Length: 248
Image 1 (cartoon, helix red, strand yellow):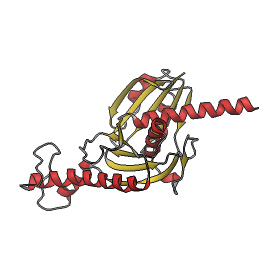
Image 2 (cartoon, rainbow, N blue to C red; image 1 turned 180 degrees about the vertical axis):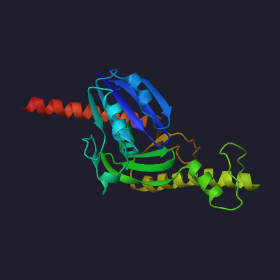
Image 3 (cartoon, rainbow, N blue to C red; image 1 turned 135 degrees about the vertical axis):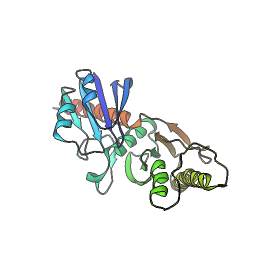
Image 4 (tube, one colour; image 1 turned 180 degrees about the horizontal axis):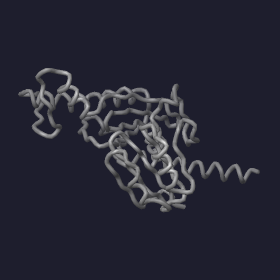
């Protein structure tokens, strides 16, 4: 059975088709126009969608027409881990899907860091309990905020000279943003490592940071983590449905 997973994010739409656990094709479109996905119609038997946007009726109609069986992931969706988030209806489904994808690969205490428009930190225990996480501004958001909320600071690109200490305004901003993110992440790693043994780290998202404090961790980088997590949700639903039918 082929399964289509669709992740509608803040700036783009990512999708993949799976056979069992194997990703057989994937793609990405910029923006939030779902009409290009029509090329995937009838390519899969089941489809699951998660979105950071509120989908309108036309978008839902297009997405529903892609497969005979389409699921829109929500806090009511049956998942293979325990969600202990205190306001599950406000939790971004991309965050939950990423955690599911990471846990299915490790079954260990795992920190998932997604470096996109925002940086999200999400933690799942070795028992499969999602405890929650934190959200902070992403790299581009930080560069943009320094420019837009001050009178004189210029807008700076992430690429460029990166001395240990900024030697002019350009490098001061670049080093401040990039090193600030790196120290922030390393602080989360240190804090969780003190409490949880055998901590694993999953990195996903578009921005890249070099870390000094991950040598002793099992570290994975996977840009398709959300899509893989949704595939795990579909597999879990199929398995539980089969178990119920068997028990009758």
